[in-house]
Amino acid sequence: MNSFSPRKKLRFASTLLFSILVLPLAGCSQSQQEAESDGASPDTSMAETHSGGIPSGSGSYDDFVGLFDEFLMWKDPARAQGNVPNRDIAGKATEVYPDYSEVAVDARRDKMDAFQERLEDMSVIDWPVHQQADYLAVRSRFDQHDFTLNVSRPWSRDPGFYVDQMLRITFTDLPLGNEETAALRTKLQAISLLVEQAKNNLTEVAADYADLAIFNLTNADGVGHGYPYRATPPAGVMGWYQDFLQRAAEEQPDLESDIAAAQQSVEGFHGWLTEHRSNMTAQGGVGREKFDWYLKHVKLMPYDADQIVTLGKRELDRLWSVYALEQHRNRNLPTIDLPTSSEEYAARISSTDKRIREFLVQNEIITIPEYINELSTNVPWIVRPNGPNFWEQVQFRDPTPDHLHAVIPGHRFDGEVEKNNTHPIRGKMTSGARAEGWGVYLEEGIMHTGLIDDLPRVRELIYIFGIFRAARVPADVWLQLNEMSVTEVVDWWMERTPWLDEDVARVDAEIYLRRPPGYGLGYTVGMLQMQQLLADRKQQLDDRFVLKEFHDDFMAKGRIPLSLIRWEMTGLDDEVSDLWDRQRLVR
Image 1 (cartoon, helix red, strand yellow):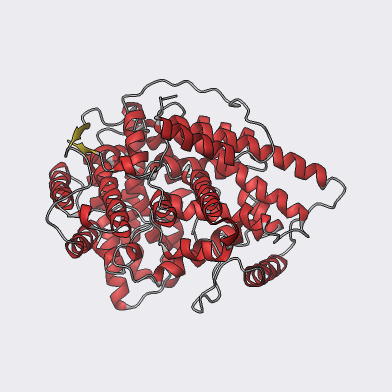
Image 2: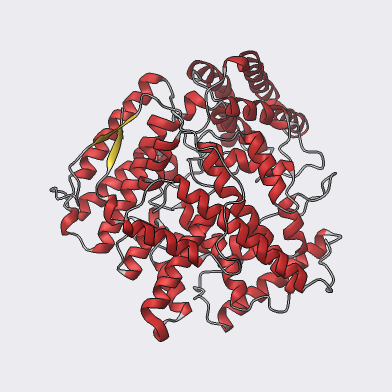
């Protein structure tokens, strides 16, 4: 493990100790080779862009806000204007450029350099703490985009970058009016151009990326995040084009020729990938040096890769231990059966929602704004030939764990609060670890406030959710350090997670390898940061601490990185003070 400063040692130790609820500190349960990797981008280096310290340039806070708005519009005009962006396999917004050629990407790099230079010329040293936190949050977004342009480079390394853009057009409901038909036809006709661009640009393809793209083109993923329901899921992207063609034949025949032509282009791309697969041997991860840089300057986390692996393993041990104790406690109680119909499942969701909302109010957990109405839920009712997948095994039995995480007061509640956030910076950004860490914190945290005291078997489901989140942490790191392949991660997870099936494990491994690095570890590490913040505020306020006020204050800070929220809420700067001395990624 890398050496720490005394302050970092204390911070890291306190986080570990906070996670220990049952067991004494134990050794790691899984050894892992700590081989250094050159990573994905040997031509990208670190270089000092300023001598350190808080910037003392000429730009005002208003100039800073204007720069951020300009960046958002340049980076993704459609999304900045409220239009629906392209989506990846998990339904998340994906980076989309009109042109991915070397010339076009170099032009974007030049523009990004100009944005960074303007950002560094702000008079941040004169701003109050909350505005300095805004600055670091925005800088992390700039650095993330720099990282995509210079290290991740999905347009040249990941065939799935193009496959994602081919898929969701096939979900279009038919028939369409004249204007929508014209727009759809334009998109369909562009598929052939997208394929040709992909063939030209994919010059450094990672082996894992190639295998995942080939699989997704020809196989149903077994999960179907956001996919329309089919009793028999189509066989991958190519199968969805056949499904689209069949629907068009019945509902809008004038689109058949355009759909068929697009389908032929997609099939040609699959053939090209298969033919050239033997030459696609690059590594999927970014390597240790770049990943540590990313964790610090993009995720704004106070831990490096090795420390995060230790935290993840320790949390995995803790959760397995409390799961074992809870099962023993409940050994003479009936288990929770799966529902037998969609109606029974819907009733479980309805009663869960009512129970959670009442509990939050009656027990003064968090303020529910008047604009929070009915919220949608995850995990639709699906009857699968091989039985429920991992998420369904939990959700169908009792919706409580995911309702806390993803509905109220988790993601959907969180998202509605964000929609009503008019702050010029914080109303326009989201930190993944902040969003997911909050969601995971709520699962076990609200349980400890008494929500399911009368539902002991549901506590077991809470721990199962936590086990999978904790197992993601070391594997997410190992993927980025090129110490495990996707296949090895799937096997490692399945050995350590109750009910985990191969489909969910593979899709999750793909999501966390192909998304910007570190998303998978953000669930548990973000939760640990939330617990640390809770502990800090309780120790500072002692008898004056009020949980509802803590949660409301936290929500009011927006969805910026948790280290910045902690700085604002506690006044403790130990996790941010060394962020000012930053080395920028340069070409």
